[in-house]
Length: 176
Image (tube, rainbow, N blue to C red):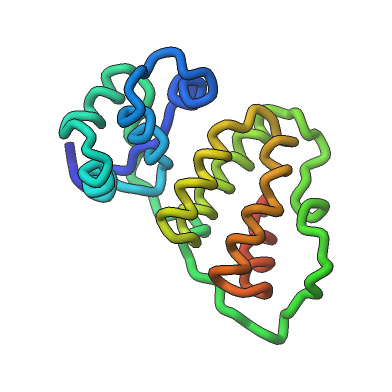
């Protein structure tokens, strides 16, 4: 497998995270959690070594249909750093939840979009340990409302790492 190949969970993989029906091994479940569409095979293999995962864990997940390779494309905008521009400072009392919430909270397309955006945001802008914990929470969400309920935790982590202004700027990119 090409080390630069990006991998993402399939619908079956997302269902496995939520229902825990197929994978019995905690290590294999953790490898599945690491696959987020942002990390390439090389990064995943390095992280797998830290988990003491079998060297063929990604192949096993591919064979089970839990993950798939993404087509080669340009990186998403969430990877681009947001400059900390103090002239665009937003008051701390800004209610991020209302700025992001889609009108149709249970619409499957909105859920899928917000799910991907939150995973990408967390992976790109938080440290590995914090991102892993939040990605686990994101994986357990079953509705758009569940995802929106995580926004205060995500905002708090972003503020701690990047400051209030940049955290709000990153959150404003959601749904954009």
